[in-house]
Length: 364
Image (cartoon, rainbow, N blue to C red; front, side, top):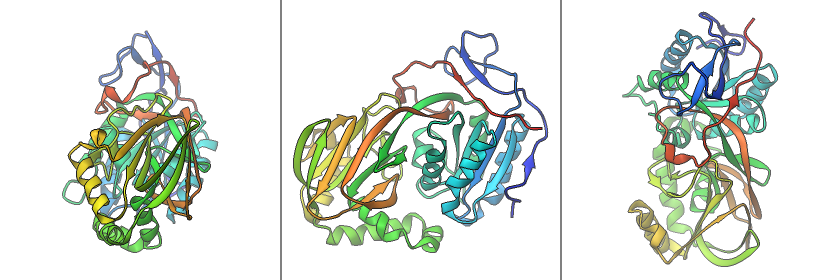
């Protein structure tokens, strides 16, 4: 195994990062007008969840760390003994002065690290080795898989060339999310697979697909009351999604084409109906990108959303099981610093690139 918490990879030195407008030293891939000044030692802590995705990510991760080293970063690896340890490890990294905290895992790992970093001065980076990797795909990053080991090196190069942006977070019953929260079929699937840690690790998307089919055959939907910035909606739905990003469903679908990462709003989708027929209809509609014109789908943009159901329903946050309804959701603008690689579409942002500083303590 790669050595854990106490391992430091401190080889070449680079004087730290400070991003500002109008300087003299620029770097390929950065937003126009965003520049680099070197005045502190860059320190990055990497939180690895070995239970995310498939088993053989160890060597590709080592290679990614070597790329970061060669770029001058000082990387400390913190390996989680259990998936639930990721948030605590990230909090420890922030407390010890990390300027960047890299989540090496899937979207659940990214969520845990984002919750630890929210409101801090540390920036979130990602090395996608999980099952869904939607956040990485939203940033245009290739995800690692068994037949494709080299993308992690490519992702690491992207981190070295990344700009730093502030993005919004959603907050669902007190828990932050980068991607989405909601109720319905996806939340029911998340709750079904939650205890199946070993099967998720071994089967990945196959387990989710089989479980999704089983749930869809038996899920009738629910009566819901939704309050969106004070506006009341009463609908029977098979799925309700509150999105902070454009992609959905393992990154396969562009659910929210009008969503931005920094606009101060969440995009809300109410998929009306009941039973398998409605579920299939909406699946095809989203797959063909017809859903934004579908009269059976209700769409809003809102800052606060309250969801009530006639009986307690499962809730998902970033694809992970997260309790039951009622559900209170709000947007928290500009709550998180993230590393945005050159591969990310400029269309993800509405705010101009500005001065964002990475603060922390240098390597000794």
